[in-house]
Every structure is written in structure tokens, then in C-alpha cells.
Image (cartoon, rainbow, N blue to C red; front, side, top):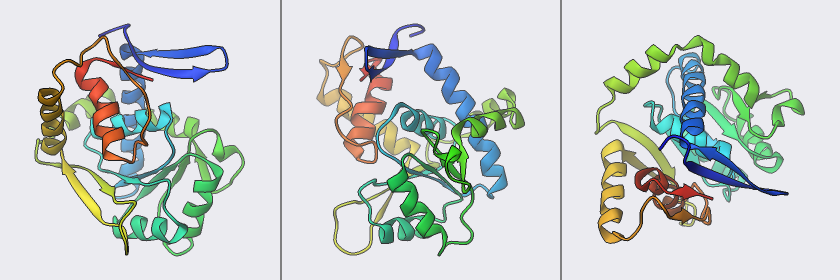
Length: 231
């Protein structure tokens, strides 16, 4: 879709538009950077503890498109649940979005000595010595070539594990749900059959959180499937 808009982000003066071409370039840069981190952490899953933002969506797409298993941690999770999920999933690195969520991750790290880098969105790294700024992450893209990323994508199989999402509303400890790439593709075609009127001229409002299956798999990846715009 080239220069057509994929994302539109509200600003004080209107909207900031990110085209399909711009998003693809950014996703590839983030994927190469996260692959460098993954090599450092022993290919363990990457957790995302964040509230909706453009960067969160791009990180998710980077993982899904490069075979990096990611773990979506509900931003509504308590400190104890964050610690449980990070430990239960065997997470290697964490992407976090704001001071409140960072506090929960740092508290969990005290009990999880094997937890690797914490990567901050929104310049959290500038204020906290424990956090790697997002710009520093992107600088690591030079450690993984575009050819290496392409080869990794070529080796992906449809039944490989893509992501793990944890429940946010059940009693007891959170439960992890495993999704293969086949599961995600099947969801997209099933919803396309159920909603044949949706197409590339539509816009999806970023209403539900990306750690929710509808927010992630209907709204966000739905825009990618239908060629629509995610606002």
C-alpha cells in the first residue's frame, strides 16, 4: 500500500500519519534490534508491559513478523502478577511504556535475577539507570543485517509459536494462552468471513488495549489484513 496511511496518531494539531512504507521500515529496524537483544538473552521471549501507543504496535509487529516470541502482559496487572508472568513465561527482555508500569517491572526484577534488559518507550531510560532508552535499542540494528532478518523470516513455519497472551480477569494466577502463526492467520480469515463489508477504505479506532485479543487481533492486525487505517 506504499504511501497510504496505516497508522494515524492524535497530536495537539491533528494527526501524525505513518504510511505503510514508513511502518514497514520501522518494523524492520525494530526487529533487527530485538534480534540482537534476543541473541544476548538466549532467545527467551520478549515481554511487552505497555499501554497503547504507536511504539507498542510497532514492537508487536516486529516480533510477530520475525519469529520473536513475545508475551503481552496486561497493563492492569498487579505487581505480583507482573512478577508471576515474567517468571512463568521465562522472559528474557522487557519493553515497558510508563513510570507506573516500570515500577512494577523493577519490583519484579528484584525477585527475578535472570531477567535481562528493560527497554523503555517514551524516554524512560533517560531517567532510570536500569532502563535502556528506545533509541539505544534501535542503534543495535547494525548487529543484525537485513539478510539475516530475511533468512529468519524464510525459516518460520506456520505452526511455530508466535506469542503468549495472559488473562487479566480470571481468579488465581494469570493463565497464558499460546498462539501459533496459524492461529493468528485463522483468526484473520474467520473475522474477514464474518465481516465481509470491511475493507481498505475503513478506519479502526484504537479502542481496546493491545494486550486484549480483540484490540490486538481484530483492530490492529485487522488493519494490516484489510489494508485499513489504525487510529
